[in-house]
Length: 139
Image (cartoon, rainbow, N blue to C red; front, side, top):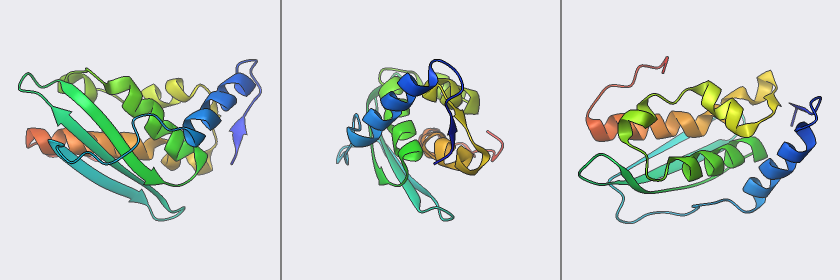
């Protein structure tokens, strides 16, 4: 795994990433999910499945995930799912890759960018699927 630890926050943030990888938050299948989407990165074998329970106001009541893969993909999933609890779907539609990079707090090398963004890709696919909208691959 290539990450930059050049900043003072690098090592501390790297420990947070490892903690999310070893002890993922909101991990597991949700049987009463309003929507679920599974996505993968076949090049490295990462898999993330996102489960969302959404109320009538378009708010995420509960979000979970399951999957397997590298520390970056799984920590990114854990951190992202933890951060979206109680958020409106419109807010989630506006999340972008910069949100993931800021959340991770480290510079992700070019080989791991797809790993870091896989959970966001699955989340946005779930949101758009629930809303009956087509997801633009650029989003």
